[in-house]
Picture: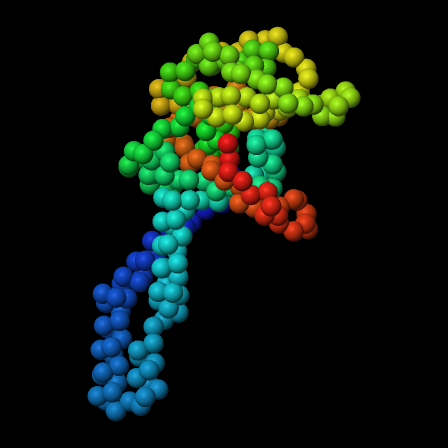
Length: 266
């Protein structure tokens, strides 16, 4: 697991905020008192200024606390940026896409702990959602294909929700000869999006019943995605937010970022 940035941000904001408050309520008064005593004893201007000057810890805390507090509020309750590291959501999201996640779409949650304190809405089939999977402490992004109570079946690489086959319309294949993958338009809930499938059919039938308080997630790159088919359901408490837009794209390496690929996420 990498650095827990939300925890680091919360701790940094709390520590600098505590020092700022301590300075307002106590330390500043002590400095003023010390400067007056120095002046009374005949100290010069330099000595008085030295008494009034805050320590480096206080100076940095007072400077950084407002910035950290704003970042904490924006990141925890409003919007948070993420970068797509893998191809599991191709063709909807490409490796190198920078996305914006709405943190309040599914309710306002406490930072770090993830406890919901205000209900707003619930995830719906077809939403693209960022979450923490049950098997590791990393951010994942997949599409919601099953909400609490849904019966999910995956048969012949076709998705069924509550025994209803999700509509697939063939778009293209790549390459045209001996294709490595097919592209389909899939309708899921009220969302139409594209998926990738390889040409090899699977006669197996997999079924799941989504329990209360959990969600079933799948990647749009159906044969190249680690998702709920392999590691199970996503608990409601592990939800981070709804992916709403791509605001920047950068190919790996020394290539410049591109803004012409900005788009809403369907």
